[in-house]
Length: 91
Image (cartoon, rainbow, N blue to C red; front, side):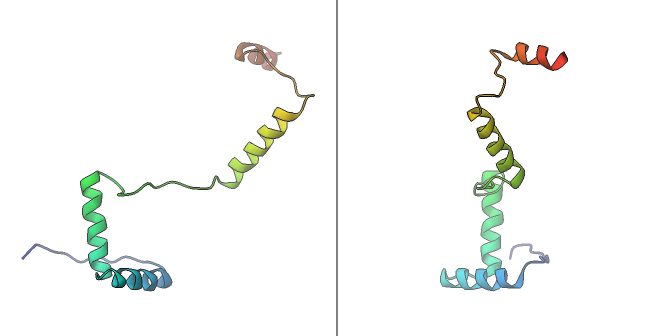
């Protein structure tokens, strides 16, 4: 028999119930699903799926909107290159 150990995980009770139902439909319990996740993590050397934010956060959205506004505003000073912009900043 394999050398096993126990560990505790705190999780939202609704998430746990939903995952138990999901994995039950797939014919495995939550413990087996977690073991599959951990084994696959070892195989790929990290998360076995992409971990990223699909939506930018509020600050990024605000910066993007400001950049779009500036790009459309004909009264905003334009520079031909970075050096010109840096010279203006030093003045």
